[in-house]
Figure 1 (cartoon, one colour):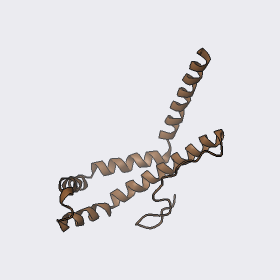
Figure 2: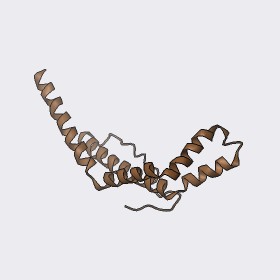
Figure 3: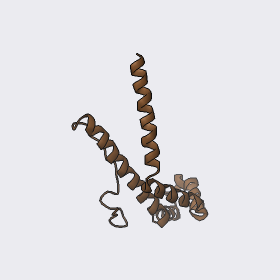
Figure 4: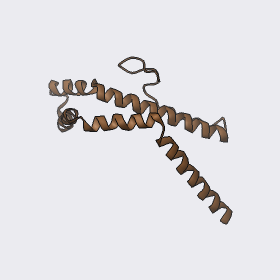
Length: 125
């Protein structure tokens, strides 16, 4: 039992090292900067709050639908979504590399919505 516990501790330490290395990647740094820009955009946050407060009325109030569309089309949100997509791509590659060591039969779900390009056109790394 002691050997298993040592292996688990070793794996936990290795997982911490992988996580620390992942957090230092440029793609993650970019994501954190985009998220900060999103959170710091007072005008956008106010619009989001207004949308959230009126979400139940979106069917009956066209101005709320217009507000929602306006929010979705902002460059700040687009850039954040691209950064999220990039982080997800790297996470998927990491998961595939790990699962590939175990078995080629393990499938990794690549839930990367903008992989082929979003509503603003194609995105390239």
